[in-house]
Structures are given as C-alpha cells and as structure tokens.
Amino acid sequence: MESAEPSIPSEVSLKEQVSDILRELAEAAGLGPGKVVVVGTSTSEVAGRRIGTSGAFEVAQELLEGIREVSGEFGFELAFQCCEHLNRALVVERSLLAALRLTEVAAVPVPKAGGSMASAAYRSMKEPCLAESIEADAGIDIGETLIGMHLRRVAVPYRTKLRYVGQARVNAAFTRPKLIGGERAVYRVLPEEQDAGSASHCD
Image 1 (tube, rainbow, N blue to C red):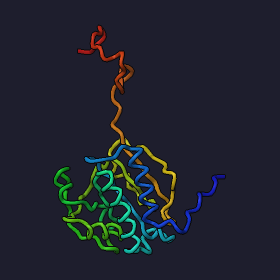
Image 2: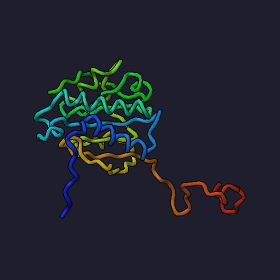
Image 3: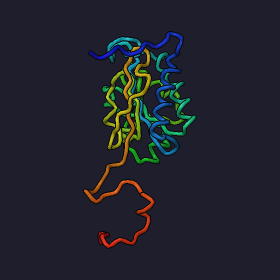
Image 4: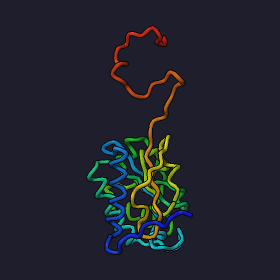
C-alpha cells in the first residue's frame, strides 16, 4: 500500500509552499529567460474542497505572490490556465502573446468563469490578455487541473519533494526536444566525435 504523504507544517505559508515547488522545478529544468511556465490551479482543492466548488481569490493572490517571486528570480514567463468555462485559455502578458504569435481570444476571467487564479493573475499584469493555447516549456498543476494540453512535446514528469500546496496535490513537468533519427543517431557530442573525418557520413 502506498505510504502517506508527509504532512506540511502549519507554519509554512501557501506562498512558501508554491515558491519552493516552483524553484525546485526551475532548477531541475534549467528554466530562465525565454522559457514559459504554465500554471494551473484549483484554489478549491488547496482549501480541501472539490475542484470548482469553493474558489478563493485571497488564496490565489497568496499563491500568485510566490509564483511571481520565483519567476522574477529566474526570468521565465508565466501563463495561467483558466478553468473549463473559458475553454482553458491562458492569461498572459500581451508582450508574450505577440512574441510567440499566439491566438488571442476575448474574455475577462472572473472567479466563477475562469477561476480565482486566472482572475488574480489577470488583475496583476501590466497588459493582460487571453491566449487560446500555448506550448510551454514546463508547468505546475496545483489540484490536478490538467495542464498537459499546454505543454510542448515531449513532456517529462517531475516529482518535486513537496507534493502538496495546502490540501491540493501538485504535479509538475518540464519538456525536452523530440529525439529524432534511428540507430545511427547521436544525441550529445563526445570528444572523439568532434573530428568530422569519417567514411560513413550521410550525403
């Protein structure tokens, strides 16, 4: 039988929990400028309720503070997934939408249609807008909101040391390029292979 998850000391704030998780992911995945992290959050699950039933804007604001702190530290961009009522569109800064040439959709997320986290993120940004979809380099999913549709292929699950924020289970992932080729393909440069003098090259 699976062992119980370690309990979180009550003195550890939600901000500290989420920032510890995101910082660990950023270090493991080498996230920095030019990278995008998608964040999915159920504040209902954080509070120990069923997803979509008890969203809390104040909880979202505390989590957002921790997430933005780590984003500022490492330099990566953020995209916040809305709930299914807005078709899981993403709250992003307009500068990111333009840089990645994303498809814009029109709505203003509110707690009951978009979710508390998306609503808080929208109100915190300089020039917020909604993107229909994105291909993020990594992501964290707080409360099992299903962010996989917004991750670049190929997604690699990453198990952080801390697996919960509040009462919500956390999943995380980063992505890697597809490995292409067959039996002759090489995926990293070795010192002895730097010499191009080989009779077995392809044309």
